[in-house]
Amino acid sequence: MRDWLKAWRKGYGKKLARLHAWNGWIVVLLAITGLVLFGGFWRGVLGEGRVWVRWLHIVVGLASLLPVLYYLFLAGKHWKQLRGKPWQRANVLVVLALLVGWLLSGILLWQFRTVGPYWSNAALYTHDLLTWIGLPYIIYHSLARTKWLKEPHRRTVKTDKAEPAGGLHPAAGPQAVYTRRAFIRTAVGAGLAITLGPSFLQWLGNNLGSGASLEKLIEEDANRLTPLPNPLPDSSPPIGGGSQGSFRVYTVTPIPTFTNANWSFVVDGLVERKLHWNWEQFIKQKRIVQVSDFHCVTGWSVYSNTWEGIPLKELLKQAGVQPQAKTVKLYSGDGVYTDSLTLEQADMDDVMVAVLHDGKPIPSDLGGPVRLVVPKMYAYKSVKWLNRIELIDQDHTGYWEERGYDKDAWV
Ligand SMILES: Nc1nc2c(c(=O)[nH]1)N[C@H]1C(S)=C(S)[C@@H](COP(=O)(O)O)O[C@H]1N2
Ligand SMILES: [Mo]
Image (cartoon, rainbow, N blue to C red; front, side, top):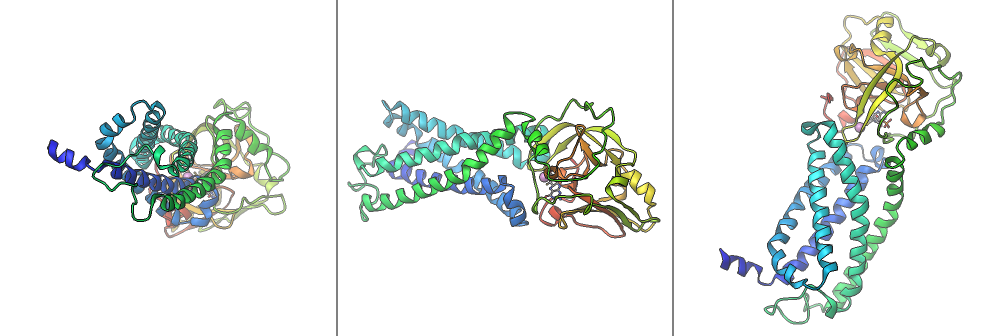
């Protein structure tokens, strides 16, 4: 066993260098796929591709366990070599800690169904935080590396005596190979920094000043509907005490905006009476208030939302559901997004056609003037800019369900 280990560790400098390169590419791949998953922009562009990107991210992420384990095999010797170089030792520990932290929080996110929204939310926060700290750190580290790579005598990764003198790539000559590699690293690093900066600032804004981002979304509400609905006493101040956490604005289209002229609400299909309201009529309907949590499958949650609106079951009662009807199909005013509920699901008391959130009109970014809220299901059921409800006699597969999300959306 020991002999085997010794033999295997022989030429470890070369192994370590190769490992370092592999690690680099794994981090680059994870960074790119991770940012694509994080960035709202890509949701509409990728469609079904998003689910594949997610799988790629998970598989590569899990595979990163291999270089970590591999390194741990080599670590003893490497550690000795780094004696008297505390910064480099610290660097090794930081990178290992980052990889392990990403891996553990990533596993929780991957298994969101098993661990539940509480753990997913904590894991997503950790995953993001590690990214915003770790990615710039790694980029900086790899940029710094490029400088000393040009000076072979300053390289810390030394080759074994058994290997040809003159570096790791004797045939090509270290200079040429490393300069090109250094260039690629620099380019990748700079590209990441440029793409990372704005997302980081956005994330910071959403997660530090709690509530600040909601206020900003309300300020930037692009809808122009009058009159504004008057909140019920339970909404203002909100009985839930104000929502905890922040919404990530998700959309698969440009954000649609509405005025009294282009907004209406329809209930049709297999109903006794087709219903059609304009804004003034719609907000005269009796509303109620509920406090509920909001969970997205990608891991984040917003707790204790005070929603005010009309229970979906009330609208269905008014319209009169015909006996052949099976499914409630929900349309977004964005013209693209749809989802559905079975009649039984639509009959739950807390499924709400919401008009106010924490006592204020729902801003356009968050699906206002009217969005659906289905607290017991993942939020892809909560159709934003809801403006049509159609009763149909068939099943309907919603936008994200068509693109890989589970038809079973129960939290
Ligand atoms: N019209 C429309 N509704 C939608 C979506 C969307 O992209 N378009 N995304 C869904 C998903 S996956 C989530 S998590 C929530 C996000 O709501 P928010 O953007 O208000 O945070 O809206 C849901 N409803
Ligand atoms: Mo979601």
